[in-house]
Length: 147
Image (cartoon, rainbow, N blue to C red; front, top):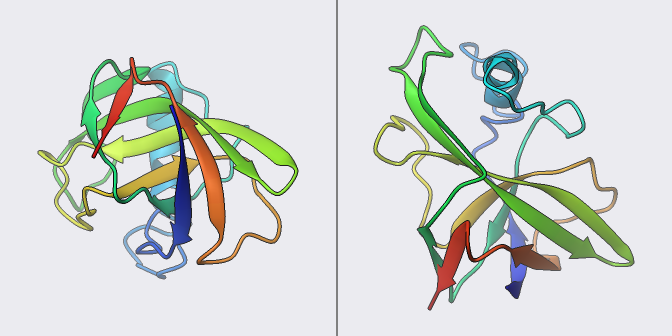
């Protein structure tokens, strides 16, 4: 399923832009080695997330590409579950393949997301700005978009 989405600001935790001393370099950089051991290599991607607003859609988890349970990646918070789903993003004349990164809301202690926000892990994309519109393709077998 392909929809239009808008680039929005995030919390800055994933990339480390929020300068949280607990997570130097960002949460994704700290989590990535754990994901590698579990079978998911994030090295082709920028170690931060691109936040998109998919409203008026929301989503329903179906069959994730990866699901990691009780990952103890930080001494500062309890272990978390993580979902990953395939995603393709079109911007200007480029298509970028990546993943939807979703800490399980049931185990996530900080930075709650709206039900219309998705966090994407993609290669670095030049010139993206908040407010830009993008096309996003999501496999409905993995993550069903609903209205």
